[in-house]
Amino acid sequence: METPVEVRRTPTTTRWQTWAELLGVLTVAQLKARYRRSLLGFLWSLIVPLFQIVVIGFVLQGLLQHRIPNYTIKFLVALIPWTFFNDSVLTACPTFMKFRDVVKKIYFPRWTLPVSVVGGAFVHFALSMIILFVVFLVVPVAFSPVFLYMIPLTLMLVVMLAGLALSFSLLHTYYQDVEYALTAILRMYFFVTPVMYPLSEIPERYQYWYMFNPMATICEGFRSITLEHRLPLPEHLIFTAVFSVLCLVIGLLLFRRMSPQLPEVL
Amino acid sequence: MATSGMPPVVDLRDLWKAYRRHHDRPARLKDALMARFLGHVHQVEKTWAVRELTMKVEPGEVVGLIGPNGCGKTTVLSLIAGVLSPTRGYLHVEGRVCPMLQAGAGFHHDLTGLENIYLSGAMLGMRRAEITGKLDDIVGWAEAEAWVDTPVRTFSSGMLMRLGFSVAAHMEPDILIVDEILATGDEGFRARVRRRLREEADAGRIVLLVSHYMEEVRLLCDRVLWMEAGTIIRRGPTAPLIEQYISEGRSRESNDGSL
Image 1 (cartoon, helix red, strand yellow):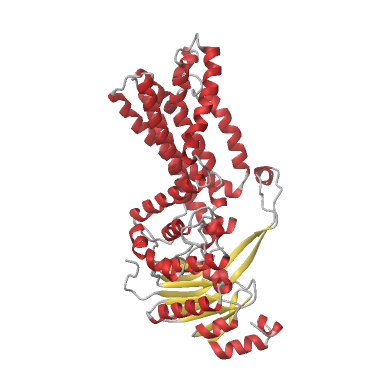
Image 2: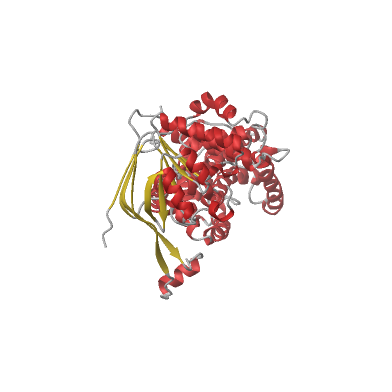
């Protein structure tokens, strides 16, 4: 049956500056709210992973020392992008639920909600990277212009995360299982991705194919760029870039389709 | 700037809005898969929250929507605000809409009043510089100087509403949508809100008001739309329509005899 609908409306905000500002305000608000009632505040976001590194690092260093030299630093370098990925996806997942009151009452660019979570995680990521560079001075690890290649890798990661955050937060409004499933899947994915171990631990004949995993390219990429001043292979980089853009496209398509129904579903 | 100079438009013609009432919406993935692969069809029932609704509001008008709970008033306002999209019909809304559908919607309870002004303002489409420029006015109008830098979770509902209203009112909207937000205010504040809304209307804006307080409607509205079961059954000047509304026992005032 045909249902003729005609809607004429002045677009609310199409200026990207307004969107960027909204994104910024939401990001800052979430970070502030998260640490408002704690004494150490922002430091916690560094203390927790540091503990993780110390514990896992020492345990595994003891076990693997003879095989993997400088294990702790190798772990740390890959853990930073992984944490960015993991935290963004898991925190973004229930955002629409969390902000249901606003979504039901105010019309605004709703995509800013999950994407601002990625923004918050990015702030943590950036701070961790600063700490990492301090560690590099201490260890020491030689700095090189190759380090700049972490910027395009990070960009791919941000694009991928924006898409994933959108997709999962939208699906979560229909199926709450998404969050639980995601927790389990991410835990598995953590072990498939060379975060806790360097790629060199994988039998050499599989290594090439092993890297056709976006997070493997990014985590191992961070590791090889900083510690070996070497980039991942072009085909792996292209694969990751294409995957990232695909994530964003899927996220945007889902958003376009599901966004109008959001106030009713929530 | 907010106002484009064009007069605001609210023009709905033969508008319908269906809600799909899922009797057992597949809340979990398992159910959705079962439904798909095993043919367990869950029931979806369409209910029309708004049906063949036609209304047009002229710039400078304050129009009240009255009717019993569940008659579709809030749905109409949400359609005009753009939160919901219509199922069928013609909807034309021109101008910056300010949805004061709920006081303090978009407020984050762990943030201070000040931080929330920026958050809520940004969600309503204001630029940062715009908010900063109006900050004193917003705080002053809400008479919030004393507590604006404390977390919102410590606010009373009246404080929350005052601040929420003040932020929304300062975004210089063309169309103001006020849905029962005055309920928690004291009389002094309600009088100030009424004055403010009247000023906005006199400046050529559109004000739409939903209230169950007939006194509020009587004091504020130029005309009234009476809704029952999703559509407008009567429309006209405020005073006679409210008389009829009360005498037909549709208002709470007829039951307990007081406001």
